[in-house]
Image 1: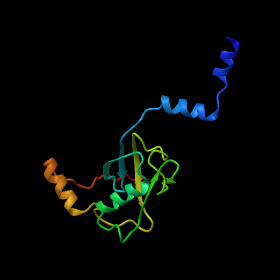
Image 2 (image 1 turned 90 degrees about the vertical axis):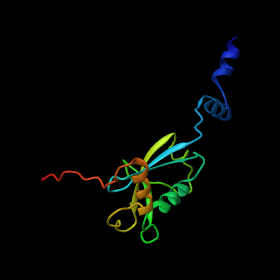
Image 3 (image 1 turned 180 degrees about the vertical axis):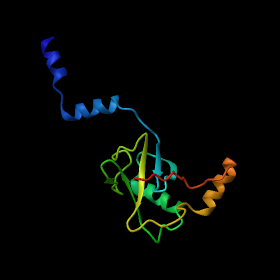
Image 4 (image 1 turned 180 degrees about the horizontal axis):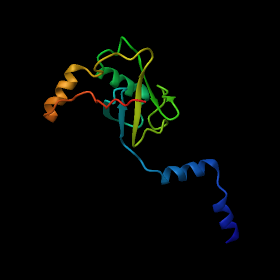
Length: 139
């Protein structure tokens, strides 16, 4: 009985990893929200096995000026740029995450999303999608 108890306490790294996999939850999709500087949020679903580059490609397809001004994705705090070759699982972006979009140079002015997407949202919701406005405070 003593030797059986000892064998249960000592295990190889492979055995511990196998036990960890058995006890972990399996997620088949990852809900990613991308927030832009004007507080517009774009929400998309991906497989946790997809790479961050796939997310960035989808974000770029929704932007007006993706080619003119390169976009990058990051998490905060602290500010950490996401590696485009890492999977969503490796980055800890499952089952859901909020990430931010930033521009290499100055962010474009005006609306970020393509006009046809904003129009489609307006038709689906039956309301006008407007840029968020916040009261100005004096310091």
